[in-house]
Structure formats: C-alpha cells, structure tokens
Image 1 (cartoon, rainbow, N blue to C red):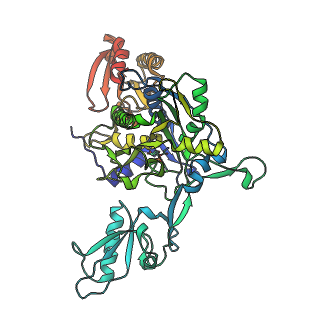
Image 2: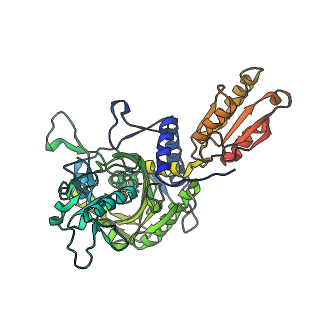
Image 3: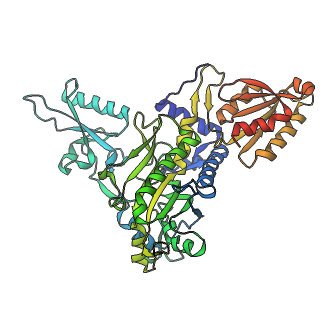
Length: 519
Ligand code: GAP
C-alpha cells in the first residue's frame, strides 16, 4: 500500500475542494458570491474546530501542565466582550499603531501588503544601461515569480541566467522607483501606489447616534480582554502570581490581503493565554511555555518535520517584546509556504507593557502585592497566542493524505483526539436484522463517546462507498454488522489509516473504540 503526501499547490486545491465537498469549510455568503476573508465552518469543520478548542482548554485550563516546581501551574478561564471601551484600544496601542502598509494597483484594482511584495530587476551587463523596469510578484508565489522573470526577460530581450537578476523588497524601495514597476496582475508600469498605512481594526458605532463619540472597535486580539480583567480575576479567585488567564474567541482584523484559505482571514479565532509572573522569572517562564506549546501541537498530531520552533531575530520583535527576553514562533510548513514555514502560534514576553499602559490610561491601580516577596510590582507577561482557525488549517493540511491504491484515494488522517467523527457503525445490508443490531451498537457508542465527537451510522450505498466517505471525513474506525455478526456476535472493525479489517466481538467494541481514541 502506497500512501503519498503532495505538499504543493495542487494539494491545497484538492484540500480546499474536499473541505467544501465534505462540509468542513465553506466560503461565507457563498450564494451571494462570497465575501473576501470570511469563512463558514460546516458540520465537520465546526466539530473539528470545537475539538481543537476543547483540547486546548482541557490541557491549559482544566488540566494545566506541571510547572518547574513539580506542581501543576495555575490557569483560569475567561470570556470577555468583543467590544470594549475604545479607550482600551488607545492604551494598547492598536488605535495608533495596528497598521499594515498597503499598496493598491490602479490597473488591476488588486490590493497588496507592501511587506509581501517583491520586485525582480535585471542586473545590467557590462556596458549595458540599467533596464529601469521591474516586475513585482508576491513573496512565496513561485508561479508569480516565474511570470515576472519571463516578462523581464522579454523586456530586456535576453535570457536571464544566474546572477542576471536581483530581487528587492518593495517596502524598502525609493518611492521614485515605484512608477517603473509592473504590478503582479498589471500589464503596464506605474499602476502601483506608494504604501499607505491602513488600520486593521474594524469599527462600528454603539447606540443610536453614529459619531466619533460612539465609535467602537471589534477586538483584533483576545489578549486585551484578559489584561482588562486581570485585577477582577485576582480579586475574585484564589490565584496568586505566577498564574495564567486563558481565553478562546473571535478576533477581527481588516487584513489588507486575506489569503491562503483560512490562514489569514478577517474574522478568525484565537486561543490566548496571558501568564503573569515576577519580572525576574520571565525568562524561565518564557522557556517553559515555549517548550510546552511546541510539545502540545505535537501531541495532537503535528509531530514531524512540518513543525518547527523559531526564535525571532531582534529586528522582528514587536514594540512590547523589544525589552523582553524574546519571542518564538511555532511554525508549520503549510503547502503554500513550503519549503518554508508559516506562523501557527507566537510565544512572546510582553513585559509589563500592557498592564502599565492600562494602568496609566485608566488610572486604575493594577500593581500586585506579593506577600511572599513583600514587594509591590506590575507582573510581566508571557503570552502563548495561538490561532484556533489557523490550527484547524494546519491539522487539515497534516491530515490530508492521498493513497492511489484505494478506490477513493483521499484520506483525512486526523489525530483521534481532534477527529470530528470518532466512530461509525454500518449494517452491511439493510435487512436480516442487521440494521437493528447496528442501531443498538450506534446508540451504545454514542452514549459512551458522543461527548467527544460525532458517532455516525449510515445504511445506504455499497460498503466501499461508505468507508470512502468516512476516510474523507477522517473517522478513525468503522464497524460493520454482517452475516457473521448474526451467528457469532462479532463485527468487522476497519482501520482508516491502513484499510485493514479485523473481527472484534460486539461486546468489546466499546473497549476497542476507547483504545483507538486513547480515552
Ligand atoms: N495577542 C497577540 C497576537 O494576537 P498575533 O501573532 O497577531 O499575536 C496570534 O496572533 C495568532 O493568531 C497567530 O499566530 C495566528 O495563528 C492567529 N492569527 C493572527 N491573525 C490572523 C488572521 N488574520 N487569520 C487567522 N489567524 C490569525
């Protein structure tokens, strides 16, 4: 049996199409032509996302990891409002500074982030004048780069060999050069605008009057809701520094160029934990959370070469992280970033930046009195900030497998913990008492495992087609009630990953499922 992965753009196309066909992810408002940057999660996608969210909550809040002292660390949950007092976003720096440089193409009407645009130019040969004209393409878009090279070769009327071209970042270009560039989707030079800063926050108005005073923002990160409630949590629960507050929920960013399926969307979900600690212990906790978070993603099926931990260089650090002990990203090799990697989760030392800013702007006292140290201070924060919807994408990419030796070659090899369907029960044929036995087993499995995910049954179509449907949905195991069941009380158990079948006593099916799911 040959199982092959194809980490390329074809695979991404196939995956997006499977997600649509099987009800994982649909384009939002599809019947109206969709809306760029928004996605809906169908029955399988919603369950997959909930399973990932629940796994994160269970492993960070309900059963948090063991800390360096051998005791479980202390983390509590929170669910804060999406819309907060707009002053909070001024204090956090988002009103003033949450901007992306944006470039418009007047010819194609396309919009790009300046930091994602690259331009290729010809290096003049001896005695040759500078060609002047340059061709833009999007970073990571290999086909776009090839097109730009071809157009450049035609323009300079020579074959471009190694060392004949230079690639420049659009962002750092002298503005006088911009009129000489042909945009990625343009035919003539001069259609790209200079980069303009664009605030990523969506806004609305609270109340009947729509003016500057009633302007409110949809949160661009869940983190600030945690900082706003840090004192409430301290005053009402028994936590003491060091402790964490965790939150899962929607965030909104008016991304200039939403793209790559659900990787960068305008409405998405985050799973964020703010860990409050004494400033002198920040490095130790940063390393603790960085390693824990990396191992956690491995534990739910992203193990292997597709996952890396990358420490940020100092010039990449955000304003709040500059003074800290560092920032690291858990990165995944998505098909559209391969052979490179893209961010899945960032772990940052935010110092006391947020608490200090909120303390200053709100005038509320946010300092903590540490009885053990007999010291008053603003705690420092270590923040593991993960994308829930981006995690769903990484899991979908990792699971997607083609096995051409199977009648239906697409298999979603989800880790059993996140698989939306946990088990399926089929009567081989719709007669001879088989449907009744299947129904009973289905009800038994649902009662035992239904809290973890879907338990399916399906009496229609050939058994091969039903297995294929379950492979595409990523169901780890199927049970078939057949003629033998009626005589010896055994069923066929069929494994998703290998297609192998074995007989199992019907009484032992629950144990079999429990073992398969690791529960
Ligand atoms: N509180 C810190 C913070 O929000 P971030 O790196 O901007 O940091 C954290 O976001 C995570 O949220 C990212 O690693 C990514 O997984 C996810 N994320 C951010 N923007 C996103 C978008 N537009 N679409 C989907 N996921 C996004």
